Every structure is written in C-alpha cells, then in structure tokens.
Image (cartoon, rainbow, N blue to C red; front, top):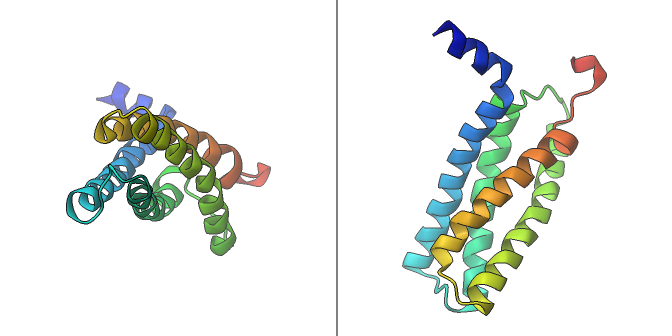
Length: 143
C-alpha cells in the first residue's frame, strides 16, 4: 500500500488528469450520444457537427473546473482569464475533433460512435499537453 501511495504521489498530476480526462470523456460521449439518439441525426453532416459542438461545450465546462481544482491545483486569481485561455485552447482540439469526425464519418462512412471514441483518446492527450504547457503553466514562484 505504501508503494502505491508513493507511486501516486510521484505521478499525481498525470493520474488525476487521466481520471478527470476519463470523466470528461464520459460527459462528452454521454452528451454526444444523448444528442444523436434523441434529436440529431449523425448521418446529416451539419447535425453531426452540432452534436459534436454540444458535447464539446459540456465536456470543456466540466474539464475546466475539474482540471483547475484536482489536476493542476491552480492558484491563479484571475479565474476569468484562465477560463478564457482554457476555452480558447480547447477550440483548437475542437477543430481537430470536428475535422476527424468529418473525414472519417462524413467522407469515409466509418461508424460515428466508434470514431468518436478513438478521437476522444487523441483529444485527451492533446488537451493535457495544452493545459500543462499553456493554460495552467506554473510560474517559478509556484514551485
């Protein structure tokens, strides 16, 4: 048990990010599936993208608060600027997400539910790097 605690402390940020990332993925996928099973048709390109955008908004909102509190433990007092930077950084991965979905689902006719899961893995990795390097970057005073 002590060894596991030591490993957790050593890799706390990454472990917490994976947990939060997993929960964020659940929020994203849950919102996406709710949209396409209730009121949007993924076979219609613009409706597919609407479902993507709605799931993105839900997931990013959840991710900002959980990353700020549990992963990066931000002490930044300018929360509005930090939140803006977080959302702005996520726009790049939203565009990547939309591009992959358009390419693989709309153009190549792959299954949208499977592709959405694959794309989410790639987006999770990209989002961690962006958050760590740009949004929640710790100053030398934080160390």
